[in-house]
Image (cartoon, rainbow, N blue to C red; front, side, top):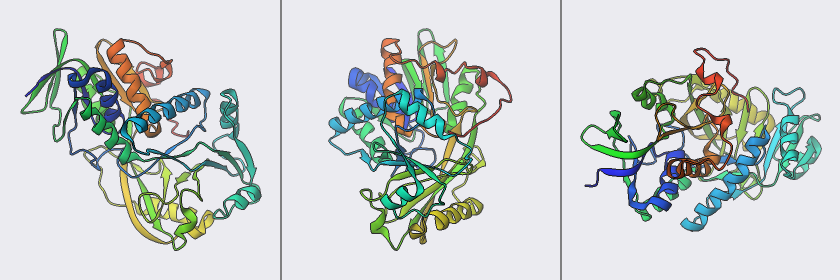
Length: 388
C-alpha cells in the first residue's frame, strides 16, 4: 500500500473533495484524501441535496469570487458529464429598515458589472405569486442564482479525483500530525502517511487539526437545521417556477424550490445553538422550527404543509464570517480552508486555489481578506458579526 504522497488532504466534504480533485488533475497518484467518517456522512457541513449559489453578495470581493466559482464548477460539470449547477434565478428580499443594507448588494454588483433588477413587492408577486409580501418590501433579482447540487457536487469531485489517480481513504480519523525534516507525517491510528504538502479542510474539526501545530482560532460552531415541507402545491415550486431566495434581515431566512425531495426546503441562517462536534445532536430544535414555520406561513403560505423531515448540520463560523484560505504561519507547506458557513457555492474554486498554492506556491487571486493572520483571528474574544 502506498504511504508516501506529495499531497494529503484532510477532510473530504465540499472544500476537501474539491482540493483533492484539483490536485489530482495535475498530480494524479501523488494525492491522498483522508476522511474520518464514511464519504458523504451527515456529521459536518456539506451533506444535503442543495446549497444556494449566487453572484449577489455584500462586497465586490465576494462577487468576483463568485464569478470565478461558476467557472470552476463549469469545468467540473464538463469533466464529470453531470449537471451540478441548476439556475433558478435568485431573489433577495428586504423589508423596510432591514438589518442588512440593500446598498451593499447593489453597489457590489454594479462595481462588477453584474446585471440585476430591483423589484417592488407588486412585481415580485406578479412574477412569483407564491410570495405574500408587504407593500413596502423590496427585492433584488439576479438571474444567475440557483442551486449547487451539494451531495452530487462532492461525489463528482471524489469520483473524478479517483479517475485521475488519487487515493481516497474513508473511516480514517487523524490521530496525529507532525513535521519531520521536509515532510509531514500524518497518523490515522493504524496507518502512517507522509507528504510534502498538507491541506486541511476539516470544517468543525479545524481547531482539532490546528492543535497539532500549537494553534487555535476563535471559531464558533453552531448546530443549524433546514426543514423540508411537503406542500400540497408542489408543482408551483419546481425549479423552473420558483427561485432560490434569502430574507435579508435578522433573523435571516432562506429557501429553495423543490429539489431532491418532494418538498420545499427552508432554513434560518445562524439560527442554531453553539455546540462542539462532540456535543452536537441530530434532534430538531423546536424553537428554530417554529420560527421557520411562522415565516413560511406568513410569506409563502402555499409552501406550508406537513414536515417531510428536518436535517441538522454544523456551521464553522469565523468572527467576521470571512473565509480562511491560507498557509499556516511558521509551517510552510501546510494550508487550511475554513468556509464560515457559506462556502459551498465557492467549494470547487476554493479547492482549485488551494491546489495552486500547494503545487505552484502561487496565489492567482488576492486572498489577503482570508488570511489566517488577520487581526480579528488573533483576538482571544473578538467581536462577532455573522450577517452577510
